View (tube, rainbow, N blue to C red):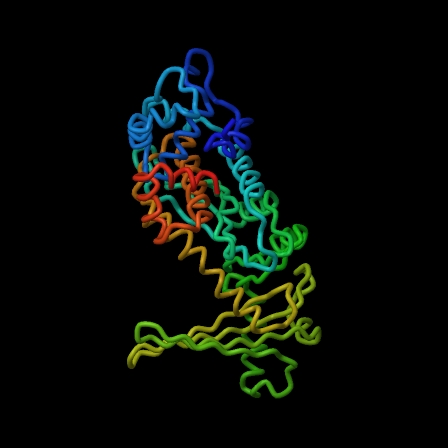
Length: 378
């Protein structure tokens, strides 16, 4: 018997708890999930779009779904996804990702947060929800996400997310908000390495790095046992030069106040970026701490790769999926719809035969059922 196009989805989400009770279960839960993910792949942005997709593709959907009472209404989709336990849904999503893809060893796992701007509700005094996501830069996959509690911040959500993920042998990068001793320990416990940005919020650590590298720069690094690299990129009339100095000598590490509190700390680095556009020159200095040895080339590459989460995930969700325009906000609906988008993005990225970006692939999936099958079966 031919395998269902949504067999992988059914296998990994069949144990997800159906939040409905009694007469509300006239539509099969797995049918609702399957229609929703197919619709989001094909461009659906909300519950009415998902219902419309189901009705237009009902004959095709009946070839592998039971649909005992036809296509659910948009109200049904909305009610179900508003009540699904988001932590459980996210756990099933993470297990699904781990089953469909083997992570490339040594790659950067970028962790960063993004607000769903359209999920706010001014009348109820509710801000848009904030999600922290992990992005595998080489595999181009969302590994998982975690909602930031309203009365908390990324510092608590990041270790919660990391504990759910499998990233052994990879390099985890986080912006300065996540540069915390607890987070460094969590990364090492998961078998990964870290490259963490240091800014003014780190107080003594930032001051010590600034003084140490400033002093060495004045002396042209004559005495420091450092690793150095330089890169130059030219694009659209803009020239960007980046230099990195990395040091792993214990004599230098010991100069940092409370440095022993940072589990696995092996190196520190200074990155100076100079951007030239016409007569305008901008210079930026950044500091990082890392559990990697002092290889300036590797540390600079990891730091640059971190921003792929902005270009390949957050930007794509905003532009190709119009995430910030979505006004879904009831109960857990916004968070759960975000998981559907990330499932769709992973499947579309995994499908390599079609040309074009994610928006073009979504159009092809909507227009060509054979291509949609390819996406579902990647």
